[in-house]
Length: 183
Image (cartoon, rainbow, N blue to C red; front, top):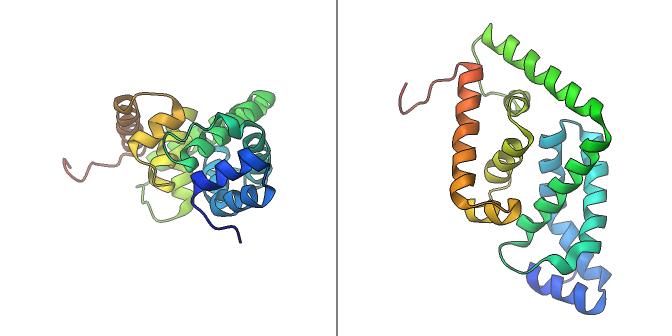
């Protein structure tokens, strides 16, 4: 096992092409990256393939990590970019996601929505834009702060907060969920 915090490991990779240090970074963060990509893509197999691509891109682009913000925030940005590049290659993805989102909205409007299963979360996320999904998953599933998300997505913290608010409102509206504070 390779000891050290993420920034120390990155420095070792950059200074000596230390593959053991990079392997430790992958070990520490692969579950976050895979889960993030699974929520974005809705496809476990594709997410695993994208995660591998993400780590290859991370190896090639590691010199661009400035040390500002968390390493996982930077890595999720690489994962998001990998996802977008893959999506551009596959127009069918957009059609499938749109169909899933429309079916979820139609099905949920005819019955009450309950947040009981992981499938519910997938249906909720399907009504969001790619960018909203990425930000919501970074915030709620990966536990990144608004600042870390802002750094990862290259947007101001206020924009991140607004997108989270709008994403939650879109989910509430599409699924007839009342806000506990106001409902």
